[in-house]
Length: 256
Ligand code: 13P
Image (cartoon, rainbow, N blue to C red; front, side):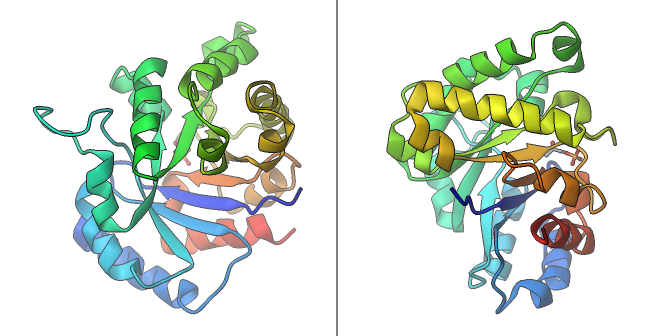
């Protein structure tokens, strides 16, 4: 099974519309009229999606993601953005379950599952993030945590939903710390997550689902991580804020 890798830039709370335009101007010469052996996705903050759609709208090699969506359709939810609204910005993906949303905003597995279902109702492709804290890993709870996150977060998903879902394994201790999981640690966790998908959705879905690695991915470690058999791309924070390093990760990660 050859899975098409997917490299996604998660800008987090960085880059308003004018910085989004600057980034696009730097990236465009390298992506316009180009084909890549992978999917390339950029996830700006909500307020920069219109600018990103304007800049990348007719660039077929780049897709847009949102970083979150509401678990509700519409109504009295001050500060929230619905999955349906995102469709107006040429958004195809939505990052859900990021550890920052879990830890800082108290998102539970149940809330994340509700958001995942809302995303699918409007045909958005979830980039579903999972991962353990250092304390959980050191306490021998890695598999228990991943099992809970996968089982609850994907509860009620059909085979079709799974075909449009990407999983991002992001060990919390590797995010923004400069400490990357070793290729062996990442591969072991990815293989376990794939086996969980097999248990829940069958061998075909497990073989097809793309599992990205996230956590201090840089141009100089992308090749080693992407060479692992169960790693199908990366979800990149800090190193995706500048076009040259984002491009270098894609190039190094797909050169194998
Ligand atoms: P860093 O690449 O900055 O470690 O962030 C990873 C991440 O959280 C992507 O979602």
